Image (cartoon, rainbow, N blue to C red):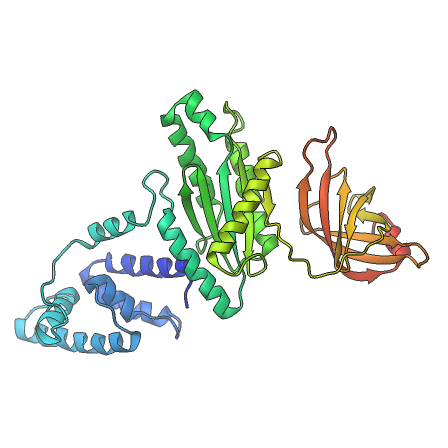
Length: 378
């Protein structure tokens, strides 16, 4: 089962093939058939594009063989080549009788009309209705194949100030530029949409938490840099939710991502926060031990907020990159020091502090020699 984005890409490839013109389409179709995978449908989407008739791939392949035979008979009978499309029309009207009252329309005009039904007129991104449909399909696909999918909701901060101070025309320009940043920051298989007003949504198939956070931060920082000289200031806040860890249905995924967005706004804006539910897989440790941490920059003074069997949350005065590895020494009363390596899986600036402060979540990876872990180079 293709993802929504893969289906759109395949459809676009067929359109480009057909736009090459009647004289070359048969040869190009042969080349296209050689390149496609064994599991990829070809004839059913091709016939749907040309006739709007729905067939299974097996039935479409049978029709296609009959169409080619019919085309050859037309060539011999007319003494000229009528073209593949005329043969298809004549076959479905006069041979198989699948079409009763066909209407001819230029393919490019039809495609523009069909495209306008699923895109937002201002930004060119997908619209809200199409995005919800794509999200449902992607959750079903991910569930069937045991994959992860991430949902990012982004909202431009204080956008009302832009409209009030610079006018709605300038507000529309900001929306178009922000949408272009979103579109250029994601992959072809991702689905980017205008979710409503100044809010955008991005569906990231086959993407786990860390990868989704990297994409979200890329978009956020690019928007901040693009509008850094504008007044009033334009930034973006976001919320991330991942299937199936945070939610098991499309509706719940939206709720969780929206909750992260709400918390990002409340925490000072211009940041992306992950969904925050009670999903803990490890029991918290009641007594708070002393923890010493070393990063690639050397020892880092930490304030422990909580520790579980799977990781810990600490407060630091320095920023530690997401996904980086740190060394830890955990010293509990009446116990030998334990050396561990950990991976940074959460990073959030603490608002309201005079000096920079960050909440850093670390997932335990494996144990190490405590003496080696104390080394700045560990």
